[in-house]
Image (cartoon, rainbow, N blue to C red; front, side):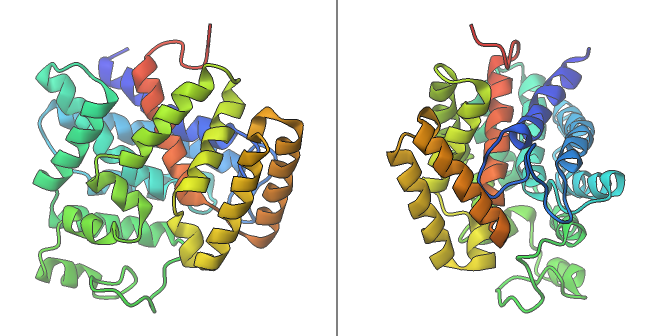
Length: 310
């Protein structure tokens, strides 16, 4: 197996293993689906992601720093193959710069560690992203058609659903970096790319500790809960408002105070919250995306025996 193929498998493990963990309150997992998006759709997406991640790594190996078409390809072909809704927009935005960064590190002959990988990913997007990358990002968002975005949104930059979005982007020379830097004011996914994946690194530190004493599934769930208690999920806020987000956050804090996955009472509370959020369509999708990329970086760090713990 070529080195880029091996690393592409490792990076694509994150979304696959994230959706397999249960119960993560409000998310698709092995135990329940959404109306338009099923557990199997996410598994299918992971295979598509691997194909485009491999392309990203090969670009880095050649010193070519192009991002937007990879994001669009991941979203477009995932939906085309599984036929469901949006399964990978967030992770596509996060994993694409990492894939190119990984190839660049291999090209330079540098040691691959997660801190350097994330730092370089931010640097490459800042220095080399283009107007074409932005146009392809907008096309990817339109393809994914997330319910929390609307033509009625009042923003300084071109609305993603504007009929003239491409002209507006070109006219204002908006690179991908400019769009992500602007969006990072409220969007936690954009914030990762422009800030060296700071919350992903934080999540990785949590996950490393959990996986030393808990089984794989409970380690993911507990890390997810701790992030949900600490970070603002931009998807919940945009769809349901800050008051609902704070309500969920308070419930998660109660669960953690009861021991989380470590106690019977904590687990009962997790399942109860999961049911409550599913019934009301409260989906912390941004936190799930961060967890997915956290697992991807953990796999890069481990390289072998990713799941096995001795």
